[in-house]
Amino acid sequence: MNPIKTAYASLVPVGFASALSAIALCPLVLREPGYVRAILGAAAALALASVVLFVTANAAGRALRIQRDIRRVHWVQMCAQGSVLVWWGIHVRSVYGYAPMIAAQILFAFGVDALIQWFRRDTYRIGFGPVPVIFSTNLFLWFKPDWYHFQFMMVAVGFLAKELIRWQRSGASAHIFNPSSFPLAIASLLLIVTGTTGITWGPEIATTQFNPPHMFLVIFLAALPGQLLFGVATMTWSAVLSAYAFGLIYFWLTGVYFFHDAYIPIAVFLGMHLLFTDPSTSPRSESGRVVFGILYGMGCTLLLPVLEGLGAPGFYDKLLPVPILNLSVRFIDRIAQGGFLSRLQPARLVSWTGIKTTRLATASLWAVTFIGVSAAGGIGDEHPGQYLPFWVETCDAGNGEACEYRAFMEQVFCAQGSSWACNEAGVTLARQLGNPRAARGAFERACEADVRIACQNLVDSSNPTVRLARSSPPLAELPIVIRGSKGPVVERRPEALRSLGCSRGWDVLCAT
Image 1 (tube, rainbow, N blue to C red):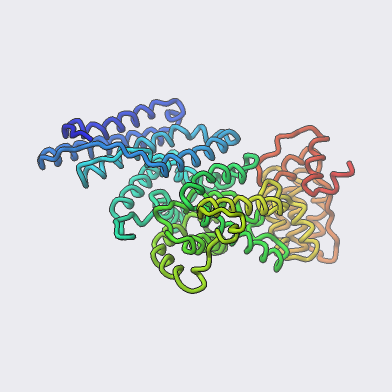
Image 2 (cartoon, one colour):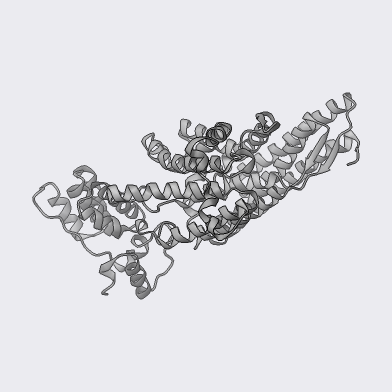
């Protein structure tokens, strides 16, 4: 570690600002003026702050230094998150299209981190730390071009919170909040309160992350090294099990799935691995980490109906609980050290194997649990709730909640261009949900598309004693109506479409 001149030190964030400005010349960025304005504005902010640093440090006679600080926790997390981003991008091309904007945030994060450290002390410790923060943030929330400057604001808030909002843990100063989850939660609250989720790609992110094949397995494998090295498998294990157990109980009581198309949505599963498991902001004790994981799993689950009741998108459910849990870690550790909670030691469940290292024992337990839950259909690509036939069958059996979701799916397919689904939605709304006004709108749309039974249903729907007609979906509309949550159906060959539909529960397609 050697002193360097203050003027040279102040040029370091200027260098990050210059590289950031160069990204504004990327063809993918130039297509959107909003991106260009935000990137150049962020670069200008770094340059201006560098001038202030030079003036104040020079006046105080400070000798600014740089020290390399490569930490295993940072590059392991970076590799895990990067692996998920790469796999997601292979199958959702817009992710790679957004890569320059992620790179811009990384450069900005390095610049902000350098400035914050030098303003508060003489030594800037540089390592991989900013990269996992940016990767984690971009796994959950992107702002659209005209609002992209908020992406940089989230980065700044995260690093400022890490530096300024601290407490004493085990006799040492430690940051309270995860520098990615804290700004994500703040942004989520503001978006909910202002009703401006539309300025982000948040819902699309949560939806398209399920598009790649074997995404649950990819997340599990990507996170496993970190869980083994840093002992955070305990949190993921308890979070997944608590959410899965709740889903099983809910299905047993109601006959339908709580999250509709999964026991654990892919975005929530991702949060259970790569968002709330920061070892620096989680409990230190094993029993505390079990409680921490259960609280996160149940928090994500129970927040969903609250958000939907407020008219807010449900994807915020995995983002909001983390800072609250971060604030609770000292209390959780304290109560977990006594009473029955102190017995919550997952490693004991595999003590018969002779594994003596707690981290290896809990990671092994989580691996066995993942395999078991996957085999039982708790997580994976083929959850039956993705597909319309499950909801049709359950609705026809008299389940009112299933009928509501059946109508929702049929209306979605109707909006996507399926006239058959418009008629089906009309029948469901008229006869099983008792909503004739909404039913007429669906019948009218199908009738305008020349679906003859829909025209007759439009006439007959006012008479509750008349049975309304349904039909089988036409071949041309199968790509719309047999799709699930894995993304669009790209197959167009009739035989392949019928086979795929049959495998997804469409019995009417199995015999044709």
